[in-house]
Length: 500
Ligand SMILES: Nc1ncnc2c1ncn2[C@@H]1O[C@H](COP(=O)(O)OP(=O)(O)OP(=O)(O)O)[C@@H](O)[C@H]1O
Ligand SMILES: [Mg+2]
Image (cartoon, rainbow, N blue to C red; front, side, top):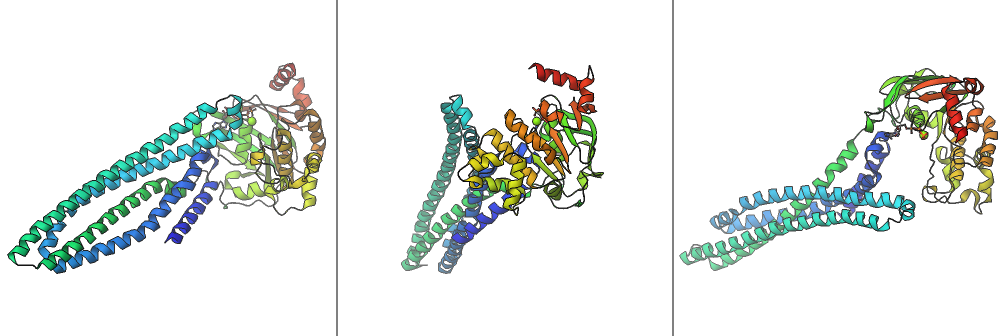
């Protein structure tokens, strides 16, 4: 039974995790990581235990109760019926108690998940906490959460104590009744003292098994309480249909033409703030395009829509003339595109594994060549362990610029038809940026590159510039052409950057 319980926990965890990683990105906007982790770690244990350990206890107690009652009926029917009169009130109390336990259990699991969430978030940001000297405040906020869990378990203890002492009291009352009534039967000579003794022993036996059964019932209710959120996690399906599923068209030969057509979009978690109000632009195959605009104008959102992390509320996005909603999302991200995020983070493993993340079968030579083009080879080779250097949790053991270059190498290794770089050079110092820029001509060869850019240097290299403002494209054209427009939007952006 113990082994079966562990197996159930293992399966629950695997199934739930599998379902979680396939959720839409929106799911992760709505749910906090700490909470999800706690559901995986703690709720699964409560549920697994409640199903197995308890079922064996429950079965044993159930059999004991049936056998004992049978023996009692065999010895004396009217005494048995007297004793049975205790069952209805206890049953009512048990149902009530079970409900309380179920609610408390659900609340306890939620409170536990909040403690994990707080701990995770504060430890994630430990450098900020330390820099602002807020250690005591964070300890205090964690203590507030753990205290809630403590209070709930106190409540559970009270409920248990009330129920079991009530049941114990009723049991003693019944024992007295049996002795009294049984005694009068013996005096009247209808049963022997021996029968009364064995009846009494049977009834204690049954009494204990009933206690066991109510314990089982309580644990079961706790399991049910903990399971409700868990099953919700297991069943919830993403709304962006097929965001990570593997159905739809698999584009094999891609030229890399991209078109945004009248795209309207608001983030699902902030549906009243429209980011795009009819965004349209076209990128020809093989061009190097820069998307520019003020901070918060939605440049990174363009990348997220193209990767189909979200779907536009109106309008469409096409790759080679095909609406990306009809493409196999998994195949598209795996084979057509690569993405360098604005704030690249690394997995807690070696540099080699981080780079080969999207193509685990890449050869050392391919990895080195990708690093060379991303201008990462130099600094990687300087580490004593080279490519086997451990990057640490979230890549904290790497500098911002190093992380970015590793992320660029990771994207290039996939040799994608479409490369999306979200300000990929913003954390690089001028000289290493120049080096990346120099290799840009190699990077862009044979593919469509979208650079979401702030800096002049990245913009100058672009074949085409798209200026986004107020949810629309306000200007497009080549660098020289746009710079010369006296009152142009692009000109304004450039002037602002130069004067700062
Ligand atoms: N996951 C999200 N949920 C809700 N709103 C978001 C989300 N991500 C971004 N936003 C909002 O969308 C708007 C556009 O954000 P976006 O990141 O696209 O801007 P940006 O142009 O990339 O800015 P920057 O130049 O500073 O990187 C901002 O107002 C931002 O607050
Ligand atoms: Mg951005």
